[in-house]
Each structure stands twice: as C-alpha cells, then as structure tokens.
Image (cartoon, rainbow, N blue to C red; front, top):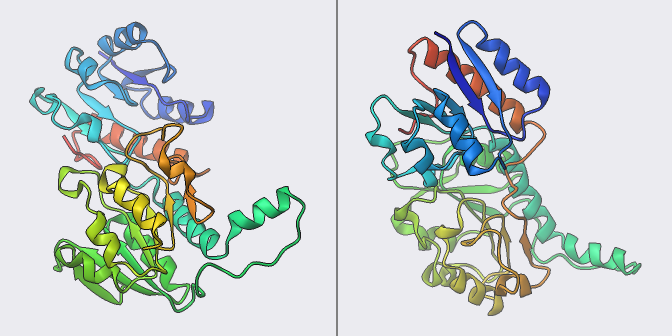
Length: 317
C-alpha cells in the first residue's frame, strides 16, 4: 500500500513540489496544504498521512500516525521535550545546512553596512542630502573577528572573513577539532578573553538551555567599545537588557540583530529606539533564492532514505 506524504511548505514552487512527487511516485502519494491551514484541516490531513514535511504542532503529531517529520528549519526547539521521542518508530529531521550561505552573507552584509554607515547614507538619500560620513570603525581589512559557534555557518563565515584579510578567533566548547581559516581557538569558558580581542563578534550557537543569556552584561563589559556584535542565532542567547545598556552606554559600537527574544519584536520595545548603529532584520538571515532548492533536494534525499531504510540526514529524534 502506498504511503501518504503531507507537505505544508509555502516556499516550495509548483516545480519543486512536482520534483518531490516524481521522486516518490512509485511508493507514495503527495498532498500539499498551505502553512496557514486551519487546525481542523491540518490535523485531518495529518491523521491520514504517514509523513509530514513542514512545521505542524507537536501536540498534533502525538495524536496522528506520522512516523517521519522533516521540518524546514535548522532549529528544532519547538519539538524538543514534547513527547515525540516516546513515539515508537518516529523520526524527526531538521533542515540544517540549507540556510548557511544566506546566513553567512547576511552576517557579512551587516558588518559592511554598520562599518560603512550605510543606514546613515540611506537617510541622507531619503532627505536628498549629499553628505560624507566617516565610518564608525576602522577598516574591516586587518581587523579581528570572533566567531562564537563553529557549526556549518561558523566554518563558512571563517572562510569568507579570512578572504577579507581578517584575523579569525573561534570560540568552541572543545578544542579537539581543528578548523581551517582560524587563527586562534578559545574555549567558551574563556569567552570574555575572546571578545576582548575582537572588533566584530558573531554569535552562531544553537538556542539550547546551556546557551541561555550566554551574552550578558559581564560579556558585553569585556568587549572593546569599538566592537560590533551580531546575533544570528537565537534571541534567548542574549540578555537583551544588558545588550541595550551596552549600546546606550557605548560599551560597544553597534549591533546587527537578526533574532530577538520575542519575535516579532513588539512595537515600543527599547531595541527599536536605538540609532543607526543598530540593525534589526526580522529573522531573515537564512533566506535566499537558493535555500528552497536546497530544502527540496534534502527532502528528496531523506524520503529516499526513509523508503530504503537508510540513515537520515540531520536526524534529531
């Protein structure tokens, strides 16, 4: 009997949905619904499916017959400790890796925009004012970057930054692994000494309990007043009150925030009040014209793995 696959991913094009359908046509039927489908409709489709591609509520999965879930994000916080690990034969895989290129390019775009004061120039353009502005910081060439978290994104970012003739410090939990394009490795227990050396600090660790408020007042106080901080991980990894104070009191020069503790960031939040030395980009760093294609390819590979009882990519449950 054929399996039923439910896809609820709005980013997939009709052509990508067709590619997935064709890849499983001999053993499964594919049905697609919008991500915004109401709960009753979504749960009805889940209950008649064996496999789901998307982000259904963990509670809905517990009451369904889904045996394989492929989510479209790198983080899987919403599915941890929800009882899914107790479902016999259940597997969940993340989309780790599909957003790496976009995220790294976004991080670099933030760095260039802040150093070269692009937000200020944009305001000048809107006001039809032709002005010159000194950069906020010294040239990127020859400066020092500190990358906190050396997963796929950290590794690629190090390669890109070395290409800009920057010195790269990597902050890791264990020193067993050696990395190319890294000048110095510092253990996370010595985070203060790492950030004290850096002109640009990139936070790329997962949003797990061990990283809650990893960047706090103590860490920001250890930074150079000329340093820039970029959070492209999870908002929970930063004590936002301490970050706000560090920016207000010029303990650091600026920040690029793709994520915040509460998303969307509420109107009236103090972070919105900060000046042109702060960028807020609405959790969009990983998005690119290429990420949906990489996700489509990952889905096809993992469906093949499912059908042939092969090891899954990015299995977390």
